[in-house]
Image (cartoon, rainbow, N blue to C red; front, side, top):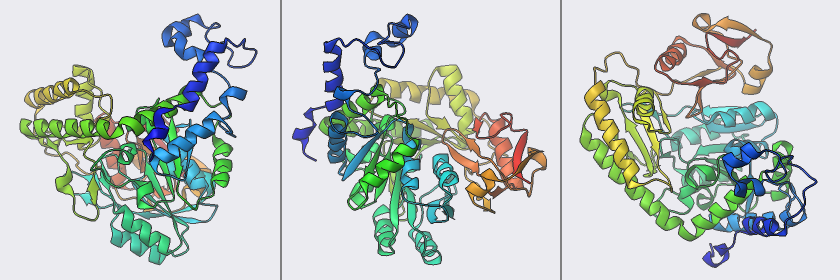
Length: 482
């Protein structure tokens, strides 16, 4: 990366110039720079509404960039060490789906861990690729899913030498990293593409002492959530390509599903956030890491909680750990993670990222402060004192190994019928059951309902997990293949 290049933010600069020109709008959007909806303008601010504009000559076009967006994307590629970068305004879901649709066609095999985000399996529904799942190992004390072991990856490649790609979470929601360099080397030796879902790894590209990034490891395509740890607006994302990937073809794939009315609020936020990370990212993420380490120490001193870190690294299924992730095991106070999540929100006005069966995750990034950390630590201490109870009878595993019967696409589009969840054992699901966040399906289309999975779904809902993906929002019934 050349830091001298990154003083500029071409899209933001073009928008600033556009505002000075006082252009009379006879185009969309219909609010006409906020004049048509004063209540909305008062709520969001005139500065925001003035740049909520449509594509035009001086502002370029996201679908076919030739000027300021093209330049901004080139700067993003340089900052991330990629050959090409695309601005994405449909969230990292759109980046993940474009990555898979550009790599796989109907009937192609793709190797991937089963604990992927639902956007990955959604992409398989869209393109008809066949998933070859690697069921993740589980850390028995914490109940969390780990990375893919190199042995499991090699076995899957040997059993499916016709697979066209392998997808790697880098990292998982909990901060767990697989041995990405070794996986890349192995996959490339067999002619397979390597795709990395780096929704939670933007900072790997800028921080010191971080796990290796997808581009640095030689992955072919990476999906990056700039809005998570990178500081851009919600729903803004990047798709990175390494050398040798056909950028023109990928752009065609992106344009199959991405809006033709790209938001300049999102686009300019990507541009300005890239500038900030390129110039200040090293110092920013040093501060974030130090805050997370401080918080871990304070939380572990409370007792009964376990804020885990690099001590878990085993060189394989936990090849590395993202120290900015503040993941905390809660079962030893007798509360599921989702219960602690709810108490923090309802009683202490603290909003963390998520809670599951046994853990919570507080997401630390460039906007956090030491004062906020102290408030979280104090709240967790009080929760232990007030709510601690026996953990007898509590589930601990956040992942249940599914029985895959057919492909997600075949199951999703098969004739289906509605049956009560409690009496669905043995049937094959035609829909998703996903706790969100973290967005990893407990059950995906094509997987068999088992007593263990049903128990897990019911247990999670009883403790307050929010389930998505089903036709019946109450989840008393479920769609199964006829």
